[in-house]
Image (cartoon, rainbow, N blue to C red; front, side, top):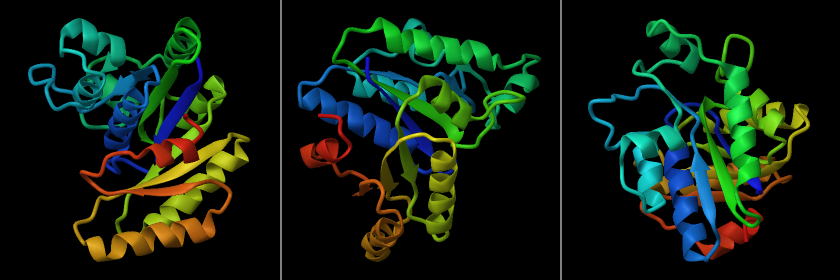
Length: 224
């Protein structure tokens, strides 16, 4: 199936919000979609509702259950740290090679015409294991990257740095999604325009909180 890797310029920039919005928009357009956030940290097994995997399951229209959680996020850790550090807190070692193999298998097993959205944990250079980063996971999947950025002060530098890293790895940048993360709406359009003016090689789309993903956005990203 076609795969889209959704990465962030950092943590808490709205990756899961964007991924859930994409799922709903694709479903609304009649396009089959699956989602996978293979690794998640900061996950409380006693209160899974509201977690990133739960948000994605809700967007897919699926009930929250232990089986559903395991299907969408096989590697879940409690500590809100980078995945390898969170795993170490539990006396475990995050198996990066197994994560890559799992994502590849999921990409290969679904019917043709179904999009697989793979959401990273943290930013594009966040650790996957002791040797690999999320960039290595995207490269192993040979998937185009949708880069999600926030709208906070400093995001332009963070975004352009992440773009440079993605391009240096030879990966395709499918687009840049600027997710509204600051309450000052007066600067949002300016931030989107500033990023678009400096990253003309890919579509740049601004998504305010509460704004549905529009069909034109899916078209710009090549998803329909």
